[in-house]
Image (cartoon, rainbow, N blue to C red):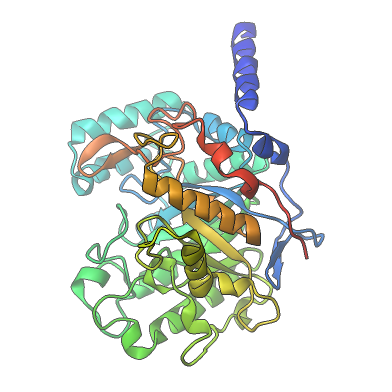
Length: 431
């Protein structure tokens, strides 16, 4: 036991020494005063002090209904790593399938995941055994996928890390494109099979309500994102001035707040959470957020490949102007649409390129994004922690080159990356 404790201590010291200075300075082992609330463009704690989200995404929306990586490391190890790197929150993704199936055991989860994930039952069984070996508190015949989510949220909270629940997809699996069936509400105008066949509106609302009720017993859950990357296709969305977005985001937000009034309600725009422009142009119609007053947060996504933010002239000034045009404007104070802006997904390929592992395109994008976030001091979440998946693209234990952690979840995939975020780690503006 003494030898184990010594090794554990040495590991903790090693992790701390590996921190970038800005990250280490922001590390905290306690949660802010809860619940959180919003005022103007700020997220505030219960005492009125600003809280800035410095988050990392952790995928739990795939076919196993589990957060990724537990075949390689324990929940305790991964949550400790997150806290030690200076992140103060996790955007934890889930599927509506998961939300509506609280009793699925670990045995059942891996057995059922094989076919939709396109891998063999033998491969899934091998992964299941590794998960249980790394996490001996799991009884695969009794422990449910909801129990594992609870363990993740509770251990994060113990280490001062908040959780934001993100409804990533309806049908569990990889996201996102215009043919995966998860893009737009099936009850909306212009239904088409390609984009909406799995996005059952009634089930989506039921899933939000189930997760909001579950979160009431988890003190670390501070916010809920209503839906990841809604995206219209063919006659959807723009054909009726995004009436479906206004209607269903309001229904979802009202339901979440009525079920759990403590959590922030996080809303992304259309075009895969890249476009809020309709709030101030055309009809200039604000989303009705009166049902969750003092709890509203906007979210936005941006990558080097995002079509909403093209960079044909390699001009950071032009890209920043587009960020501001389509989403950043909500930070302007004193407007009807003013609110906190959470850049809940951004990221890069972590290895193989000439610029400290990044490609030239991703390096240019990241430097511009860092500059933009430093100037407005917005909240953010890097995509993503997982260095591998239980299964993806019909491959078991599939590698993720965009993962912050390496394949085995033992440390940074690219140790140079944290320092690339520079002043993003710092809080430079307050109310």
